[in-house]
Amino acid sequence: MWSSRLLFVLAATGSAVGLGNIWKFPYITGENGGGAFVLVYLICIAAIGIPVMIAEVLMGRAGRQSPINTLRTLVRDSGTSSFWTLIGWMGVLAGFLILSYYAVIAGWAVSYVFRLGGGAFVGADGELSSGIFNDFLANPWEVLLWHSLFMVATIIIVARGVVRGLQVAVRWLMPILLVLLIGLVGYAAVYGDFAAGVAFLFSFDASKLSWAGTLTAMGHAFFTLSLGMGAIMAYGAYLQSNTSISSTVITIGTLDTVVALAAGLAIFPIVFAVEGLAPGEGPGLMFQTLPIAFGNLPGGTVLGALFFLLVSFAAITSAISLTEPALTYLVERYNAKRSRVAISLGSFCWLLGIGTVLSFNTWADAKLFGLTFFEVVDYLSYKVMLPLGGMLIALFAGWVLSKQTVVDQLGFEDGMKWTLWRTGIAFAAPAGIVIVFVYTIYQSFG
Ligand code: PFF
Image (cartoon, rainbow, N blue to C red; front, side, top):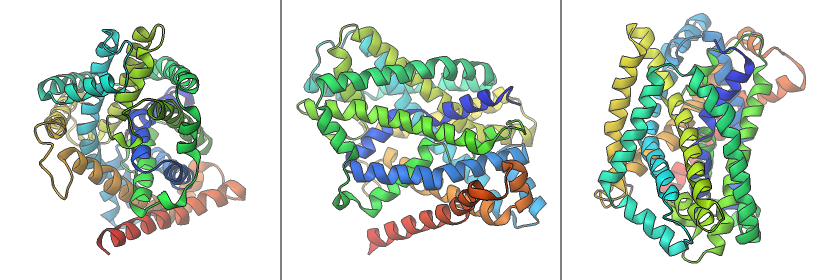
């Protein structure tokens, strides 16, 4: 059990804050036109993400096992269909898919620790920065090397049990990351085109809103909060029974959002000030923009290396949680050793990750429905599986679980808080997800 509420907050924040905030949020915001996308994302966090996160934690704490077995227990207690255990199984699969490419991108970040530390970006402009990034990605062996390194590190940490290291990483390193990020926002405000960056992120232009973009924003709300696959449910299983779930979840959601917006505010002013960069740059956006800031800053070599080191740590605390649903289940099911399971799971993900490594070079032209291997895995996980998992979780917590179980966990059963919770979990979340799914499918095929 977590020794305190703080420890759970740290672990869950460690899971939530990661590449999703610093790497993915800015680039998909750039690809989807900015302000309107950001607004939809924020609405999804508040109206869907927070209620689903509360549901995951309360289900985890009510079942106190791996997500799959927690669902089995809750299904048995509510005398309902075993169909709902699908949530657990789908989560295990989603975790696999996400980790397979997450480790590749994290590998990029690790390699940038050395690139920046070695001074490769001193005085860099847009051309140099993009050149370095593209040369790096063009070399599958090098990318594979960093990918492998990150995966091995993840396996070692997961195998040894996570609590201690996680605590240090999140408690001490995460605040430093946030300070650096805010420092970068300061740099962007002085040297970048801050007004353009802010306008891009926050000015609402309804004409830029599409259903496909809305699905991306919704999928990302799940991704960034680590929802829809049982990761937070797995952590909830260790939460002490007297901790208030709702206020804890709101703290985590707020922290996560602050980090994402700070990353956006650091990156976009640079994009608009530097020649040759565009918001829709794609997955390379963070890697092409931030090193320019560090390359032109006194002490930027050390600060830049430190920044990417901290990003790598943020990635590892998320990667750990991606393995948790599968890991805890296999340990329970086969009474297996944690280390054995960690090695098998990790190797499998590593192998699958090679597809993503090659998506940016050798296999760049191999496409399925117009998508590279990386894009297919990414699409399936965060635009299909996480929202689907989230919807099933919302329906289960809103309509299947007995009111008593829910009330026992939440600690309130009437008043404003209860109304908000009921509205979110039973209506807003499932309806929102269904509407976005239906319209996106209708638009793609209609
Ligand atoms: N929330 C993590 C991020 O934003 O980087 C990614 C993630 C971790 C997604 C764990 C899902 C998950 F279960």
